[in-house]
Image (tube, rainbow, N blue to C red; front, top):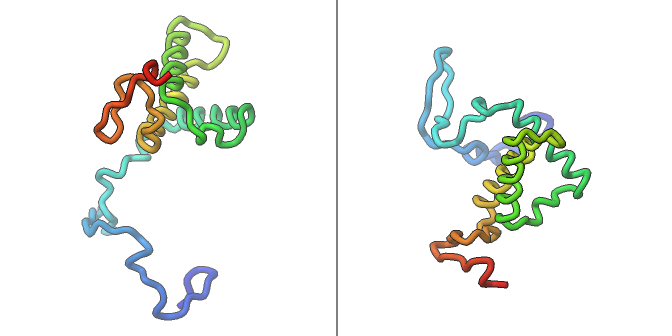
Length: 140
């Protein structure tokens, strides 16, 4: 069997494992069918200008702090503190930097960490694995 530029011996390609399938289909006016997308997110509804500007902010951060510095983890309180400060400065009309974009960056990474690194949530109300986390002041 020829599949793109790679030769794959007949009988070794399990097509059922190549593409995830919920078993539910939606049909388009053209007659084409596709797996449903409910619950997967709607990337086509994203504010692409904001996404592009956020990616530029990430690029500038990579130059300043190094590639993937954020992936090392920043305590949640620091991201939220910075986001709120940038929102306050934007609201006040400060023009020394793009405060709205900086707030978006901090909020985006706070969400990323909340989902993928909940152990970095050091806010006083934080709950990890259904157990309240000690206040940061108590652990110092």
